[in-house]
Length: 253
Image 1 (cartoon, rainbow, N blue to C red):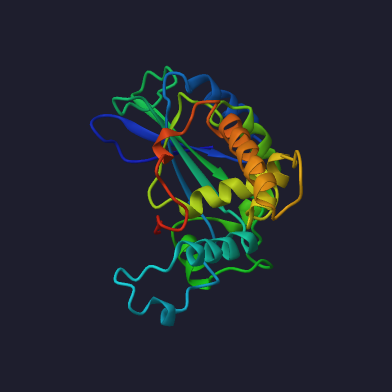
Image 2: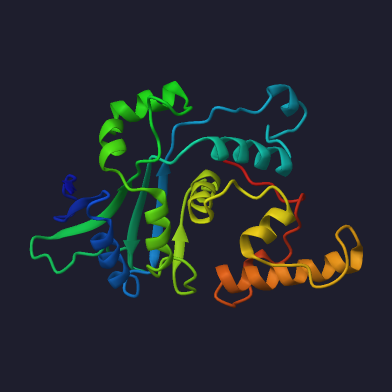
């Protein structure tokens, strides 16, 4: 359940390993800490990528990045096909302090969730990625036997206070795939490929008119935006997205 890492400044960081048999108690601990430690850093481990971009499409593009559509299609193809292996969470306060759980031995804690969804003997994966993860100590057979089912994880994280909480700030690095896998787990379906997919996930229905008619689609877009703000931003307008126009702003990973 615990794995200690070398001491830094007299403090030992302990990785709390989360499995099927202790996930409820660990989420209970995390929930009790969010108000004091509202900065959440996330990282995931997954079995590589099996679909890659065509290098011929990168010619004459300067930075070498494809269009936003191309990048999203590539991400979606991989995430839809593959399964998550691990998800790590680090909780911190504004000063960078990690939770110590009233431990008198200068120990502080972070969390590592191990999932059972990926079967190395059966599921598609990139062999070099799985080899690297094996070298780094991930026991795929133990994950398959003792790991967390992603449905259980989704139910518990939704009620934990980590999501739909305006006081929480998420910290990630090149996180397109990290958030994509999280969305896949939470929605229990492939990533949305269109507005209609998004509407099905969020249960927004057309109020009037027909699809591909401008008036009807404009109202539907507004209702989808309202639902998104309610679900993901706790009814606070996401001002940091203001001025971002789809197709003109590329992301990279």
